[in-house]
Image (cartoon, rainbow, N blue to C red; front, side, top):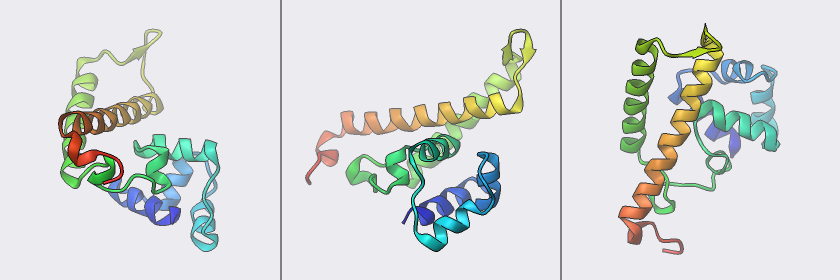
Length: 140
């Protein structure tokens, strides 16, 4: 169910479902609606949630499960988190996060973080499929 995946992602990011929904510009009651009705959000909302958590829409819809479908293990997720933190630390300490001569806003920094997380996850999945193809072949 979508709500269960949403709650797990909130836990992994150390935010409450209410806080996450508010951060994404949704009503604080939205997660409760998903929980009570079993509803799944529409396409635009799914994309917003995927970007916020740095996952794919397929992951939110439970279409990617575990390594057999090219998913990420807990070790992969920890490696990505470590790499992401190192990249963000380098960017922030270099002083180069500027837009039109002004320092980047916290929202812009968070957008960069989310985009980099998605890119790192995608690269990890592609590399797993490329370098260990038999393990990730569809239909097995």
